[in-house]
Amino acid sequence: MWSLAWWWILFALPMPWLVRHFSNAEPTLKDAALKVPVPEEFAGLTGVSAKKTVPSIKLLVLWCIWILIVFAAARPQYLGEPTFLPVTGRDLLLAVDLSGSMEEQDFQLNGEWVDRLTATKSVAKEFIGRRVGDRIGLILFGRETYLQTPLTFDRETVQTFLDEAVIGLAGKETAIGDAIGLSIKTLADAEVEESRRVLILLTDGANTAGAVDPLKAADLARDRGMVIYAIGIGADALMVRSLFGVRQINPSADLDEQTLTTIAEGTGGIYFRARDTDELQNIYTILDELEPVADEEQGFRPIEEYFYWPLGLALALSISWAMTGIRRKVAGSVLEVSSG
Image 1 (cartoon, rainbow, N blue to C red):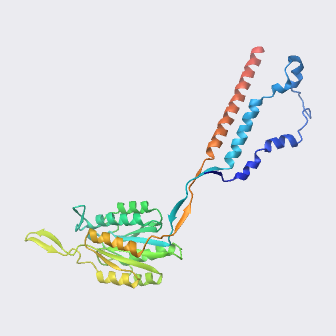
Image 2 (cartoon, rainbow, N blue to C red; image 1 turned 90 degrees about the vertical axis):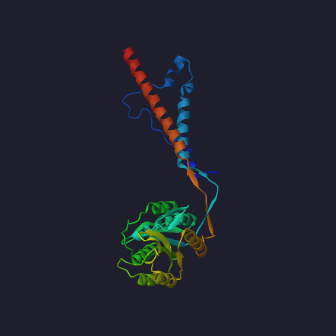
Image 3 (cartoon, rainbow, N blue to C red; image 1 turned 30 degrees about the horizontal axis):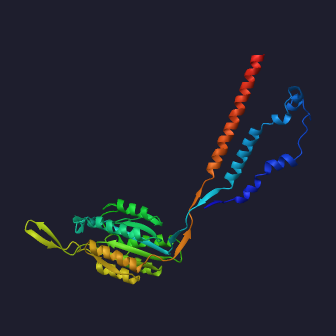
C-alpha cells in the first residue's frame, strides 16, 4: 500500500500561484537606470500577440519541478505486508569453555571424531537459531573471560562469533566463577527489569583460575534472579592406544560435577551431562522446553522510502533548465559579437 508520511505538505502546492496573484509586485521602472524592452512593445510591429510570447513550456517545467519537490517532501512510502514477530522478555547468555581440555576428541559428528568445541558449536548454533524473540549474548572463557557478543536479537551474528571461537583463545585454564560474574554484570547492564535472565554454562572441567569463587558467584546470581543451566561435556570412557596395547581411560576425570550441580540447582536451574553429541542435542531440546520461545507476537509493517525518485527527477529537470538558459545566453552573446 502506498502512502505519504507527511501528506499535509501537499497544501504547499498552490503556494507559487498564491504568491504571484496576491503579492504586490514592485514597479518595473522604480529607480531603474535602464529600461529593458519587453515583448509587448514590439507586438504591434511584428503582428504577433504578446500572449503567444509567454514561454508556456518553461512555466510548465517550473511547475513540474515544484510539484516533484513538494511530493518528495511529503515522503512517499510503500507499506509492506504485516509481519508478526514473537516477543519475549528473556535475556539468554551462552558461556562456552575454551580451555585446553576442549581439544579432547571424544565426540562423533557425522561419523567422524571431533573435539568437544566443534561438537558444541554444531549443536549450539542450531539452538541459537531457534531462539526467535530472545536476546542472546555469548561469553567465551578459559583463564580469562570475554564478552564476545553483547545481548542482541541478531542471532546470525552470535552464531558467527561462536563459529570463529578457537580453543586456547582465552587461555588453557578454566575460570568458571569469572564467567558467572561476567554474566551477572552483562545481564545487570541490560536494565530490563521484566526480563527472565538465563545463563547456559558449558564446560568440561573444574574451576582452576580466576578471582571469583564459582559458588559465591552462583549465590550472587540467584540473588539477582538469574537461572543457570550447567552442562558438563565430555565422554566417560575412551579407548586409546599405548605401548601396552589398547586401554580405556576417562577423559572427563577433571569434570567437577558436584560444583556444577550446586551452581545450577542453587539458582533454580538444572545440571546436564553430555557424554556424546546425541546427549548434547537432547539437552538443548530440553532447554527449549524449559525456556520456551514466547508465543506472543507483535506486528509491524516494513516501510520503504521512495522520496528520492521525485527528488532526483526534480534535480534532473532543474539541471536541464539551467543548461538551457546557459546555452541561450551563449548563443545570444555569439549573435551580438557577429552583428558587431
